[in-house]
Image (cartoon, rainbow, N blue to C red; front, top):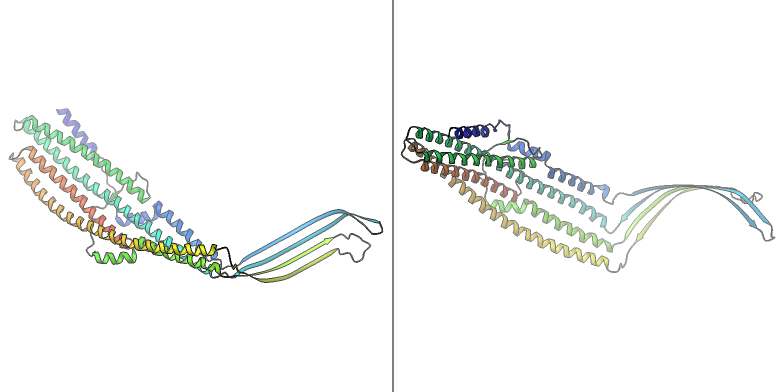
Length: 445
């Protein structure tokens, strides 16, 4: 029996010695660290840069294209010519050299406003990418605080379980003393040891869950998974949330609904771009060219043989192309684009109904969570009072160890339930803020 008690005491030392002072990670610091290091946010920033490049003037089609080319050739040939008289005039090793270069510009003056609408679509595509980036940020914040609050909940659970272990340890000590002096039976000691062992196992299980939760939090933070972190367990709730306001703000600011609206705008641009296929294209071309060629005379005796030629000059032209009939492909593209717009309009309306449903559901969850929190807080106070009285009665020998244990278990369960309700209410609040499109601007996490 003495060895068993010693082993249990050593287990206490091993369990409690794992706790060490850690620097508290505040909610503000967690947000800043996530914004700087979270992998999803970093990848989203890269996508946003790509969209910004695509929406620049360089990708608009409004700028002209400049071109240049140069060429040089050298030939050496043997040749002969037969005259009418039958005389053959040979010419060997005739050399010729040709040099030419040019620089020019091409510019589309008009293409049926297709360029104008394409550039507008690129800008709106960038705006859509910004909304997608905002969606990633909002979801990341929800993930961050889900992990943060889970660490906080398990931290409180670990503290509660530690107190339970201390109480169970004291109960075992009293049972052993009582048994030594004949006040308790052997059964009381065995029951106390069993309860203490169970509490120790529970403590180790919570400790393991807390370690896993910290790794999950470090993933969101972009930190090393084994980084030790301690979080703030205080919670402050908003007192100005109303269903009507959340519904109104969700239609104005909800990122999913705004994306549906932006997709509809892009679809309308597609209709305009395809309509431009019925319009003419007008383009301007201008270039400056220089050329020089030299060749040995075929007949040196002919004073009119050309041996060198030089030429340079500027040329410009305007071209017009108008596809009067393309077999119906433009008509097909326009019709399909209009059908796509109709589909996007339906999806936007559908998204609005989904949003109303989600807000109302989230509001019910939020109100129920607040009510549960209020009830559980009272329940904790009641069980604390019951446990304090049970402790006094147990010390006086007026209740059994089983009744004392029951009061202890009831208090622990009440504290665990209250802790879970506290963070569930805050999470429900953040979900409402996300639906209203205000979670990023929120300052009270």
